[in-house]
Image (cartoon, rainbow, N blue to C red):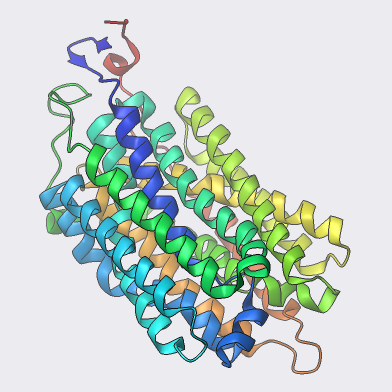
Length: 417
């Protein structure tokens, strides 16, 4: 397809699909233990917090590795940057499967988790970079949405499949299956991924980005990006914390681990649907901020349902609503951040937004554990605190201004080649 004075290549969809596959694999390995906390504590003979640490390790490592990973992506490109993440995911995912079948190997499982976690930012920080390298401006919100959708697909598979696989194949068999899946995903990426098309998919000059550290100066001069960082701190941190503790949150209501996995899975299913639908509307309307506001408002309602609902079906509805709105805001937020900080490299802005969510995720996870009722195990108090923070994020979103150019006139024009 040729658009005005630049060409758009069909192979962009292949690159996006193989990228989505390795993204999904990293998230499958991240949240593996979220829906089987009680089974894992018994199997490895450790505390709930020790199992939570298997997920938190990803957030802790992300804070340390995110900026170097963004530098590698922005300096050496997609194949090298994401390739490093893919190899680490495959190697340590397989090692986790080998070590994880022995109940005395908790420390080795934690080491494997840390190895996978080191690879994660090399993959996740490239979402908007892949969109920018291969897609025209009018499709970048959609491409970022699909890249983010892969995050949700991986989490959905972990929450939905892990309880089932654990029942039928024990924890060791489940971990080995996930290890093999990560190897396959990494191989597919290495074989089919390409750095960039022969010619940029945008008007001349639009592909040029500033150097990474110059980009940091640009980002922090932009008030809208600072507000966006706070919003991601709240929203992504809330998602990370609720996903990590989903079984503990609903257990006082008499919900089983399998049902908890279904609630978490439905939350992600809502996010998948939202990531498919909302970013495309944002691209079509050439607006970002209205969708961020709507997403935060809807997600807050869903979180309130999770906090106060006691029946299983109401928890299912609340989980779906929270996921649909909160997770659909992610790709729009990533693209908004890339647009308002131009010419900051996409990997840099993307990585900093994700890093804020990892920092808050750690704080919120520890906070929820410390505020848990010693008598009943209820986490309602901490969930109320998260609701208040989400309302604050909603208020801040009204101060966001639209990017100067979400799409250019030359990008709208086009005909089939």
